[in-house]
Image (cartoon, rainbow, N blue to C red; front, side, top):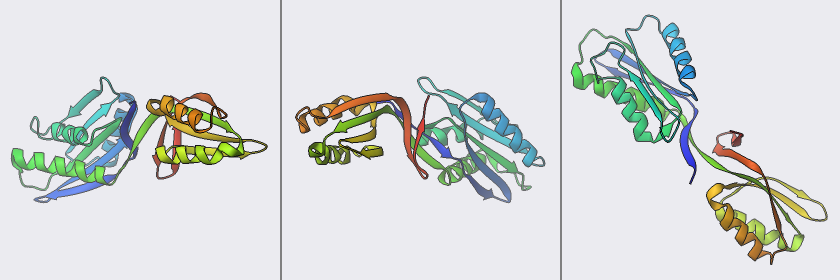
Length: 217
């Protein structure tokens, strides 16, 4: 099963502890260079803040993980942020937390709690999607087999991209890689071998707030 959870749209969130203000920000990133570019933007935007702590996870099998306490006591900022990302089970994401000092020392426990809370709050305002690897498939059928194919598609919750009606019907559908063989067998059996499935290429796809999105990577 080749699929993973990631951030589609980043969000922001704040947490205040004894007048220290923690501003969490989430960004979808595909490379370390992209992550560092966002960090530079954050430092310029919040130029008067004392700390800009962060963590990211990029890639899979294995993933690349990095974090920074940016002057906070070791283990009180970057690690808590990273643990929040891990807990969400997501990758290709940068979470940064900017701190404005409120005049009162928070101690190790207070810092860990605050950086954890700000990260979680920012992620709660982000949009997380599941990206799935699969195939674009065209199903060619006569009208007699259309109802059965539509039923099979609905049963598996597959995404229909387009349907063209002429003397025959062509249904363009996105099929996860792990379901392709079983689905093909069901279509053949359900139409007594009359339907033809044609692979049009592989892709990544996901259900998003803007509908189905496709990535050719």
